Length: 411
Length: 174
Image (cartoon, rainbow over all chains, first blue to last red):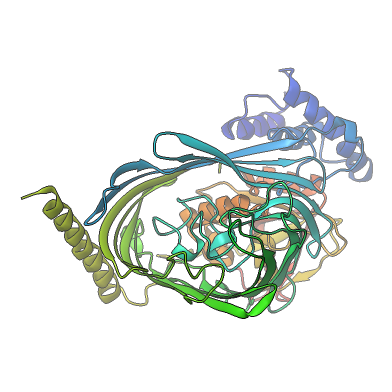
């Protein structure tokens, strides 16, 4: 063995691989590496007469380590020949949280396991991706399993990515930013307008989505345009088995992340559907949304607003509006206190009593929240939060929550 | 003291504690940067790409978009392959500070969030040495990475950043 190969081997062993680069151990990874070399190395070597075989073998093993010999940094292909040799790449992430709630009203308090979430991604070939998010949610005396997102996407380019499946609706910011990952969000819970099971906005959507970005533009523009099944007759759920009234929902969102202000993200969106609740006639729903976010943590700022209009499809004189918004501010402390991140949020939901869809649902709500997040581990956080809430019937409640949230991720 | 009173006390106590933390954070530490210290280097960082990549110059904003995976394709529609040094390398610290404007924890959370949002199926490939980095850039079409400028070889292409090469006096990555 040459000294050069020895050094490469040593570096690679340091990287955690159990296989030597000269193939002294046979196995699937080696086979993938050989495939990679056959498809890429030979051509490269003909042109440049370097790098030599062990290096290419290392390249192959590095790429094959994730189970997909042709996978790039983003799971992309670096070779397109011999598709029969490809093996899909699978990645897994998990999220979970455990909470304690103490309240001065009501009877539901104590410890609770939040959602246990599994997130799977797979690269089936150069451009075809599959994403899945599955959850187990604690109910009174059982866990309920659910498919939160399931997406098959083909990437044509940065500007055009076409997908189909079940999504979190691209309405506003929070709903498609943090999904079911409590660890990702600064606070313990989602804003009321975007909480899971909310009737304010359609949280999920089943259909097709065209999305893309223009990263070279000064404004950093991106868009999402979709259509598909709107709300189910249970309006907190999407029509998973088809649109119940044959009138598809459609939506469009335009986002900007200007190059000049790295960290700033803003967007506007529009959503339209005809809803067919089980207990009343069809209702037209139109929603506009807007948000401004400063994504850096010192400070972090999120302002999100949505306005919905509902009217009976057969009688537009019966109508009502919904306005919901929140503002959240957080600050990651500097230096040795970086594990700490205090935060505050104010949120409000105002529903017209005359609103034909939501007016009788008791959804008026206001809340002020202050809390602190402590990242005691690279992959786990402890959050403590005080919340003052006022409900539709004028009732008020103070409560105190503690949550441990974590992520299982190989990164 | 009954259970309700205890709960009210806990809620009030939590409120006071959280409020105190928030107030002290803003009063004591105004305007501090997210990154505690700047990484100073003796040799500038060169951005290197595979020789077949059809790019000569990138603005710092374009480079940031590539490193953030906001741009995942080159102009010829070939996939961009991002290679990043493993933690605790000087080059990585510099790039995180200068291009990503993040620390290690933020960098980790950024990529986990990116994957969770289904924007990328995985994070960047992690490479453990300069030699290995150069060999990989040589071997992988569409690849882009960063190395110390004094370790660059002729087998990779060094691209200009904001029109400047690492040897230029006002090169942005030094």
